[in-house]
Image (cartoon, rainbow, N blue to C red; front, side):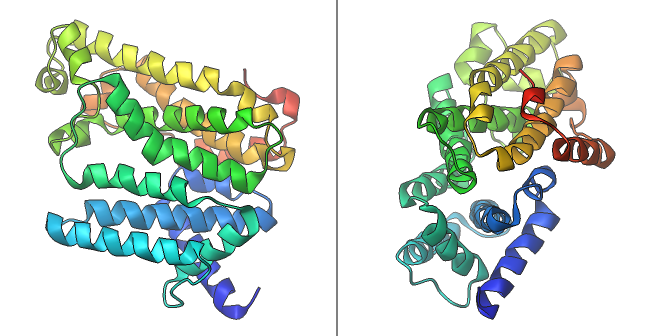
Length: 291
């Protein structure tokens, strides 16, 4: 690995360490020969997300920058990355080493494109499509880097990614509603005679609680459905997947125990708890995988 590429990867690792508050605990458990690629993928996703959400930049300019970002990504996939962009240099090497596919990155960008405006979804199908684009694709890219032995893993990786994203949607619900975004399906609000505004005010409390717990159960179904994935990836990378899943499941468990937290606070695990999960992951055996 030449000095320029090493410097690019170091930059991606720095971005991951500073910005990936939950993922970093798991990613650093990945074997070194694949860890750097995970840092590259995260740095690319972080840059795409920042372009879509950049404050103080009008929609037309954000759209222009995202077009340019996609063009730079395509150049990296073609083996001609912009040498001035560390993320693209690192992505180009990851593409070469791990057979990453451009369509999955294009889908991720399409998901970010939907966030250029205040998102509102009417149905579960619309929300699921969004979750696939911004998180299911990430699951696929991760297992391409980690390695897997059963093609069914691709489908299960999508389900795990959707489970993570549904957890994120619940965790960030207050912030998103205050920002004009309503990711949870409007038809499901209407089905129990609830509005996003009423949920934000937690009034009526009984229907608000019912609604949030139904969303928690949907996320849990995706965690359960994807459980066989843990037995399909390279065992050397299982600690990474296990730790990331335990962290996100822990956040969901907090919401299940106190549904009102989605509008009154923010569910999160302490740094100590996340460090304990990471420590346990380094000592786990395959039979310890939570089922």
